[in-house]
Length: 285
Image (cartoon, rainbow, N blue to C red; front, side):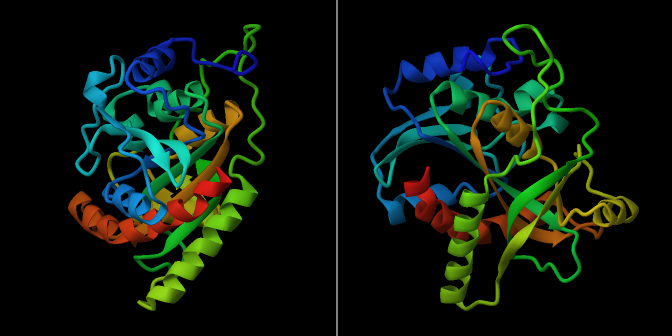
């Protein structure tokens, strides 16, 4: 990792060292479960088979702030899933919680420090595209960052230069195609009317939801869905040389009245689909 940029604060290195004291696993992938998607870990473990693994609350990892958002359990599980070692983050840290971008991308930094070369980022999102119904799984192919700052601001290369990172292809085409095929197969089998597709993630800083005009602005700019996370982790993972997969689940139509409670209820319904996709993709990590 010494040829990659870093925020230079040593936080991820310290947390990774603490994790190694509890587990000798060497994850090939990091997986982040977004709002209300904690049940996905049970589904993935049942389908792919898993070891007992090691679970650590974020509160026991010095430097890792506990999530303050309902629906984010704040625990890390490290173990084997389908015969492959993975690190599953049950909850993330958000920029809108008052943390800087370095902490908003801490999951990717820790996973990379542990040796992971792939990063799976799941999120609940509002639908921007016309006809994008609640229940749709959207595989992210690109993003638009309107969070007000770049996730790599302050990062430096080993020689001290700014982190001039190529982000022309943040999301891995192979993993994205495999995820879309898995989602299509799952929904065809379920026959419940839910569907899947590809799209562009519009990143807003939050925590307030988008106004109708803000939603229209993002839609006209090419965004398919909108959320308040993923982008810091995705850009950091890209900078650290990781393959990135973005999986979003539509919970509501953006720009219309909603609440976090409604988002959580819709996300829980998505847990099985997300868990199945993760289980299918494990051999590709």
